[in-house]
Length: 123
Image (tube, rainbow, N blue to C red):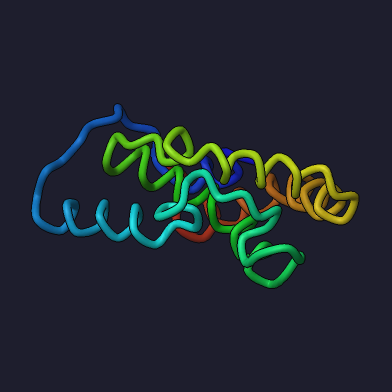
């Protein structure tokens, strides 16, 4: 699942920029990621023993948060959260999640073309 939003970010070398906004942003990402305060969480899902909306939000936002953390702060967010990686893998095995991912992957080229057409090609 990881890397789904890579096409949205202009490719550039990883660099850590220590200005005040980035320090606050890095702190926010670390504190507000599911599992950040309990990285060895034993519950099977984000909010406990049942699949909930929290798991859906996690599934479709964690890859973007990890991409921002890597690009903006040089931080490998998921490397610090093994329980989050396990949950991502487990959720990724769900047939509905696979179907949504296939539709997203099929629609991505048209989406990129539309963005480039409207705003110009990123280079």
